[in-house]
Image (tube, rainbow, N blue to C red; front, side, top):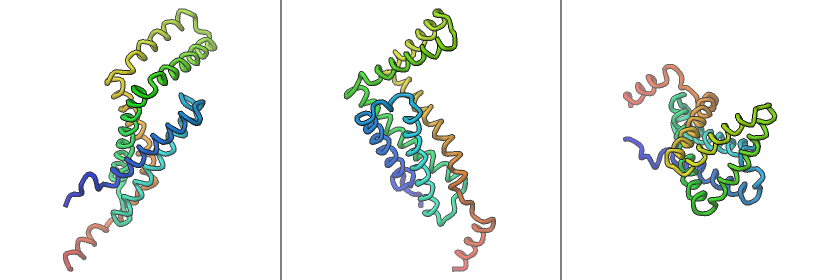
Amino acid sequence: MKESFFNRTFFWWGIYYGIAAVLIFLIEYFVFPSLLGSSFASTIISIFPLVLFMTFAGIAEKKKQGGFLSFGKTFQTMFFTALIGIVIFTIFSHFFNTYYAPEYVTEVYEKEMVKAREKMEDKGMSDEEIEKAMKMTESIFKMKDSIIFKLIGLAVMAGMAAVIALLTALFVRKEPPVNYFNESQIIDKEN
C-alpha cells in the first residue's frame, strides 16, 4: 500500500524546517537586524537549520525503513524536506515583504548597492563602468515583485538544497547488505 503524501517523513520535517526558517528570520529581523543581508553570519544561520532538518529527516526515514536507506532514497527524503521548507519560507517572505515590511527589501538593496560600489571602486573600475553595473543591478531589482523573480529565487534555493542534500546523504545513508532483500523475501515466503 502506498504511503499518503501527508504521512511521508519529508513532509513533516519540511514543515518543521519551514517554521524554523521563519522563526529564525523573525528573530534576526527584530532582535539582530545588523545580521540581515549578505553577511556571513546570516548565511551560516540560515544554512545550519537546513542541514539539521534534512539530516533529521534522513535519519527518521532510515529508522522507518528498518535501519537501511539507499543513497537515492536518502537524497530524495532530504531534498523534499528542504523543498517543502523553502516553499513555506518563500510564501512567508512574500507576505512579509508585501504587507508587513515592504521597505525591508529596499533597505537591503540599498546597503548592498553601497557595498558593491565600494568594491568596484576598490578594484579601480572607472566611474562609467560602475554606473553601467549599477544601472543593470537596478533594472534587475525593479523586477523583485514579479512572480518570475520569485520563482528564480526559489529555483536557486532548491539547487542549493539539492547540493547540500547530495553531500549530506553520503553520511546519513546506510545501504542494506547485498543479500538483504533476497533473504527477507525468502523468510516472508516461508512464513
